[in-house]
Length: 170
Image (cartoon, rainbow, N blue to C red; front, side, top):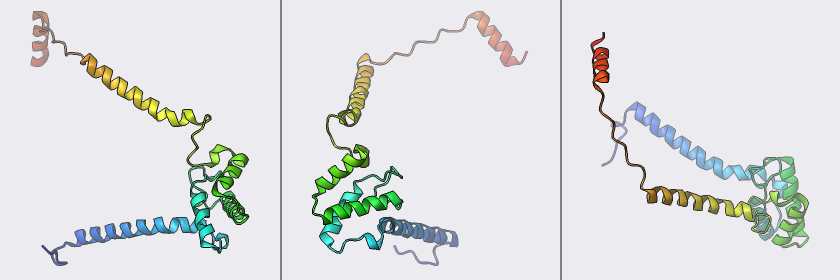
């Protein structure tokens, strides 16, 4: 069934147009967002090195913003780190050498996804422990069978008379 413009009310048409505008604006802002952070003067002429630099900088934390990668952040420190990554790649460093250099300089916090080693094992194992505790609580409560509801004792004669007085409004 085809809907014609005549069949749509002005309100539903404006709602449809607003939804389309929001969808297009949302998709556009996602694509443009990362393009804002990396300035044209930062881009390497070698596309292979540039791709490596972009891959590395998406995994490195901006030390100013802390919840953004240096690829997404437009803070001055993020720009300096992006330039440093590109400079190290041009010098011939491997991706691992660049990451090791930044970790030595800024600590593991510079990585958006920390490595699994003896210093971060607690961080990585914490969700597993929480899951095990949750499963244990569910298992224990089901095994116990829950509590059966107790039967409510009937009202005494005195309580019944008092209730009748309250209901009669006396």
